[in-house]
Image 1 (cartoon, one colour):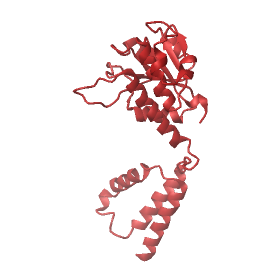
Image 2: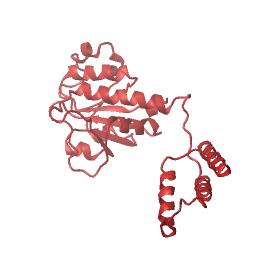
Image 3: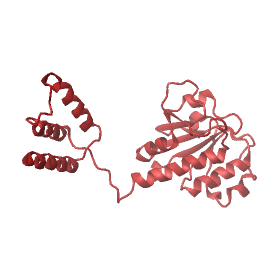
Image 4: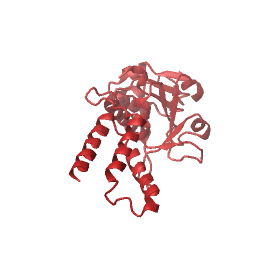
Length: 238
């Protein structure tokens, strides 16, 4: 895992030093170390953050102070805004797991924005993001404190990064379209003469349905070869 792949945590106008310390602790639990603070209410450094950081002082010591959200995310290719309300903006709305999977697979630096404890992110901050992240909490009690929200995203990133960068689970590229077309043609040929394509006037729509089914999974070359072996064996049996 490269350092550039780890998301930057941006706290916008955080209010309590104790909460900043808790955020630092949550970050370091899951290997995140880059914290940026936009106009913290009580200034920085804040001695109240140290006890609640529970030893994560390395995160606090390196925290960067920014005057605006734009400054905090200026070097980030992807920005995600955490909010319980999408605010009607035409942006993708993702779960923490989906957002962190994108972050883990991206080569660009990403930032995750968290708003003030009482009000959350305002519309201007959300407008800077390419996507909104919403935690699917109980609709009758959707209150998360700042550190809880950060720990959820930090955990999901840690989990996604372990999958994306695992040497035991290398990404397998989908087979080229020509191989998929060959698989589909092989299936159609195997079904010819079996009575499957009946009545004849429905054959085109039936073939479209089969093509759609076989196109969805994103088969690898090895998987396509295995399926073609199955089709060949069934055809010989017939």
